[in-house]
Length: 200
Image 1: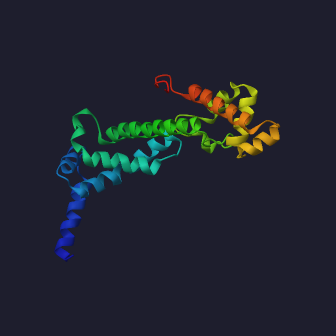
Image 2: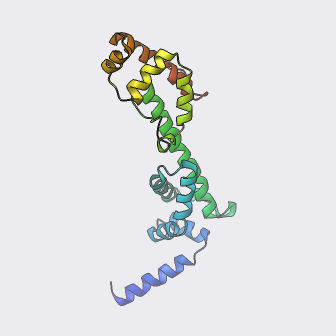
Image 3: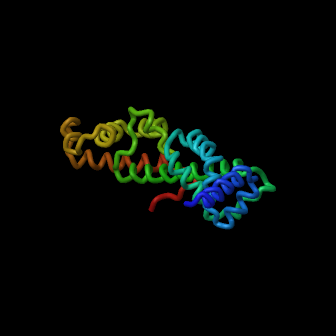
């Protein structure tokens, strides 16, 4: 880059640094990548803090990337007369974070229904798992008949095989598998959101 070109770039940076939200939005509509960079410089920390507050620290980097990608793809959705760019990005961040939480919660419920371990009953960090908390899983487990609860806890939260569970409980392996399947169906029903359709 020549000295003259460098001067132009510095001038452009100064112009963007002094630009209003409306000016930045207009530049984004014109596909100005430097305007996107300036927007990120100004507001990424607020977006990250909002995502961290709502999601408990999970997916922060992904949410920040998603929010600025959404802004880049559809800058025309921001209207300066309705509020600041920071407020608009915070609103987008809330929606994006909650979408990820709901998506993870749905995946967790599917995993529980099919017998995969996705929750640690002994880890607080694992509790912020998108829509289904450790407390909710514990409550649902306590609602199960004792023989189903014990078999599920040993198999999916204790890491034991069906054969090991059967041996420790002194029960036939087929009986243990049947109890686990029945218990998982009950758990799925208990953890399903109230507005979710019943499984076929």
